Length: 114
Image 1 (spheres, rainbow, N blue to C red):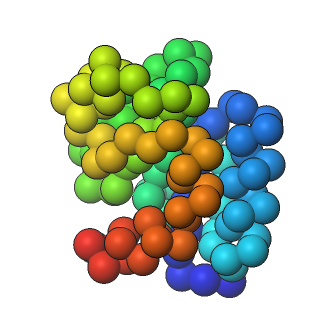
Image 2: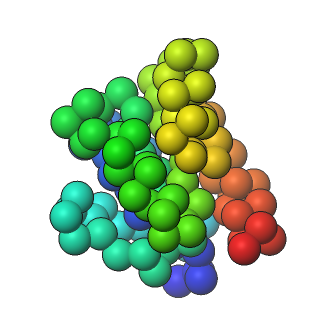
Image 3: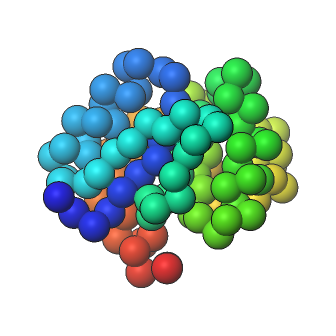
């Protein structure tokens, strides 16, 4: 198992399966923490900005308070959501499909940034 670990705050079953497949292929760790019991041992957290049940912007702000790299994920890029995420402290916002396709590059950048 790689040193790279992702905490995923996502309820989208289809995307979760794609993400798990991508992580397995690259040897990355993946966890799906509960909202009230998340661990900060991961290299980064990803939050589904389209899932309002997660209160994604509040969650992102609380994770940023603990100095973890936080990415927002969206179904389609949306300037309003992107601005709101940036204002809440998210490091970057990705389209879900692009995140999985570029996971190895993203992981390398996160590892070098820390």
